[in-house]
Image (cartoon, rainbow, N blue to C red):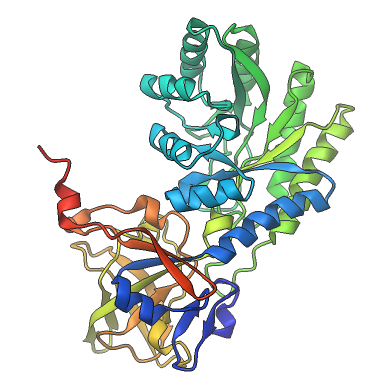
Length: 433
């Protein structure tokens, strides 16, 4: 397990029984009491990551507004934790906005995203008094301007720019390239036209520019290119009302022992330095900096626990290990081809003895959680722990094949609490007429 230290929460340990424990809690005991699949978050790790972001930018001399990207995991317990840690929040739908309000976020600390804000969501964000809206296209720019003006208010907005920067990441989570559904491209002057349209709209107030080039980024050089592109735009358009720049999120985490992502402190230095250098080089005042981390706050803190139902050996081909979850509770391997390194939670001190394929219980051949897992001998009843699964799994969960969504537990200093109960069969049918 030592080789997986950077993948697991810092509190991870193997106890005297050979069981994996997180936050001082034995995962075997948690599985017995709460059932499986079970998503376990280390609350201390969550709070530590939030503090690292605050402290990282402060140490660089460029304090940033850290905005938690709630799409990574928007359970109420997590949102309340983010609020308690002094973070602002990024929401991308009416549902996420509703959750942020329920969690007690002050409206001025809410940033509303989305590439297709429907009329209902525009009314909802205006009703809530959302502090800042990130504009993504000309149609919503016009619609928001009209709606705000009709109410006699001026809505603060940032213009999302697609800077033409292509990061080294999976195509499904790359967003800064020219061919993207997000934002106003710099090409053909669209981003500049959007800024001028905001300036002319009586219901809108421009406060800055936004760019998010992708997720699970391990190369910090993309932030320099992005900052240069935004600074060039600000220089051309006049920067007097561009007082803030949001560099998005995207910092990657380690999913396997071979990955070495930059630290949060390194990310903070790179991003703040890129913005400072880009604006200073053009003789412009350095704008207020905003960032939107999500995965790098919750990803490492989460571990998903499954129970093995059986093994199937095909001589000369492979061994399949079937667990009691899969694509309904953890879609990322199927959606992005994401790779994880699992452990046997009830035998975490064991040495690898076989290579197996861990598959889910759903009626799809592609329901594969881990294609090549090197584990101790696995048998029915064992518990498989999937480290670094705290980002996106819970939020993407579905009821495919009538599978109830899993319970979520927070652990801290030996205590556990259920923050989301396991879905029942009745819950799944509650909306049906």
